[in-house]
Amino acid sequence: MVDMQLPDEAISYQYQSLLVPTLEDWTTAAELRTQHYLSSAALRDLTPRLLQVRSQVATERELRQVPPELQPLEAAFIDLPQKHLDQFRRQGDTSVLGRVLAAATRLREQTDRVVVLGVGGSYLGARALFEALRSAYHNELPAEARMGVPRLYFEGNNFDNDALQELLDLLQSTCVDPDIREERWGVITVSKSGSTLETAVAYRTFRREAVEFYGGRSDRLNSLFIPITGPTGKLRELCKAEGFTDDDIFTVPEDVGGRYSVFTPVGLVPAAVMGLDVRALLLGAASMTRRFLEEPFDRNPVLQYAAVNFLMTEQVRKPLRLLSIWSKKLEALGLWYDQLVAESLGKQGRGPTPLSSVQTRDLHSRGQQFQDGPRDKVINNLVVKAPRTPPIMVGMSDRNQDELNQYNRKGLPDLMDAALQGTERAYGDVARPTASLVVPTLSEHTMGQLMQMLMLATVVEGRLMGVNPYGQSGVEVYKAQMRQVLKGG
Ligand code: PA5
Image 1: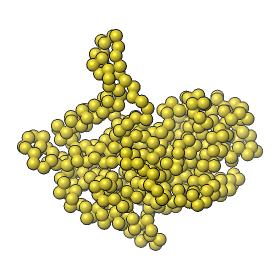
Image 2 (image 1 turned 180 degrees about the vertical axis):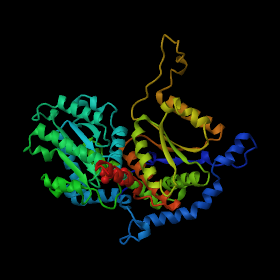
Image 3 (image 1 turned 30 degrees about the horizontal axis):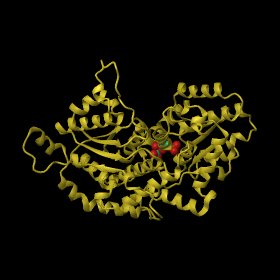
Image 4 (image 1 turned 90 degrees about the vertical axis):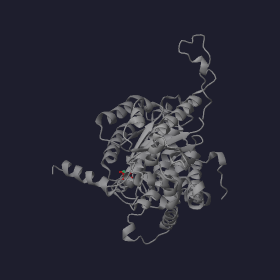
């Protein structure tokens, strides 16, 4: 297959700034750097082990019989983007991607509002894509500006009564006549296990609401609901009882875990409904898998990110991993990343604590601590190099009481860049370790690369730590206790 990636679309990881400089004169800051930065030798020494882990992760994709010490193993996400694209080319409409596109077209044509129900890995990826690639004001835009894309809402991720009621109120007050497309709504419900209580209760609530709105015998009860679930489970059984066929239900493959599932129908159906180019998304992800498997360390952001962050946690002893996000539009990507790291690596009393923070906003709240608080963090900047829209200029004004005329030729991207550089200098001067993950611009293709890169790096890091990056037995503990409480035990 021809690699459609242009060199300037490729994301990169720039970590040299957190390496202990060689031949630095003694100063207090230089001394601090020897304690809080990473030595090039440590990184070099890790290389053989890192390459061994890459081979191990590559081999795990092919394992048919999984030995007990590797269970659970959910490595299918690695090859899935390319598999989807190949299957679509061969089988067209009957492929998973073909079915995703058809279902999304149906919802777009038939409804003007879509509620996505799901929690954790069954929701955060779709939300990250929505916020990154659609207008922050998408739901308020007039229909023409939305170009046939319905308004989108996320629910089923909480037991918050008021929040759920507010969405039901909105639907009840804006959707009165079910025969008008602009007043119809649909639901995508996502739960791999099919038994997550937040999502299951929300699904039941929206079914009840739909019966009331469309009528108990309406075809729309099924044509405007899209279930996405694992091969077996309560949600699948319920949907079958409601008249959905297996073809109406999208399957989350057994060997793909929730937080690694954004390139299964879990993320692809919402992405297609929101009008994103899902093929570009998958091409970006597939190109990252190829880079991971084929490129040497120097051109391999997966290996670089995994190795540097592993050593910063385990050797330089930085328990907090801050993703410092220099784009408001990637805030939800930060939530998605928090889950990825917390659930994959927070095991056996170990693992970095992820924290995401949006700049420049949080420089005005958390910045003090980053500069001067405990030396417990490694900071990964997530930088979007160029905006998708033309720069908004400061410009000249007759009234210069704000003294901004001196910056009249600067645009917002220049100010953002100055803030980033200024912050880098400020942290560098006091030996606070930072590195930067650089995304050329926001697009489906770069989001595909970025998400696949972070998922692969997390798996590699888990293997380096000797911790299974798949599975989340810890999350199940509270669920069991909650069910006991509900049963009065
Ligand atoms: O990563 C995971 O597996 C979890 O966060 C799940 O995605 C989350 O608990 C939701 O589970 P389910 O999709 O089974 O409803």
